[in-house]
Length: 188
Image (cartoon, rainbow, N blue to C red; front, side, top):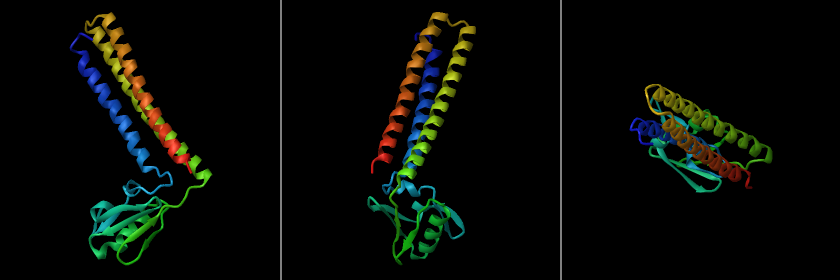
């Protein structure tokens, strides 16, 4: 890869694929595997005096054990809006309010539900792979354009091989995090 025009192409490719892997990883963290995790409530919005704000901006969200998430509001008046926000988010949780803290019990998953969640994980992984394949198409189109602009064919072939190796490594990263999430979900 001696031509300086190829360096930004590879940099852009790596950045785009890293973004696809990070997005998949982020989406996987939102998928519950039967264990309580504060990110399960990331999508919850709370009515804070007329404005919808993320849950973590109106209280402290933490896990007390593997099955319970607790929310300690910074203002006692926020107990009801937080409870309502969790219910409206339609995450399948039933929050309990003891007057000072809201507790969310994360129910155990059935085998059937675990399999459904694994399907969701695989679908999200496929979205990441599609994004990577789209990035591949853009890069290979760029290579063709550079060849028309006078870049030697043998340099293009080397660049295509290097790009394919890089793409394969990112596809493997997606497969690895997908497999890890599947194992996490199916472990009782």
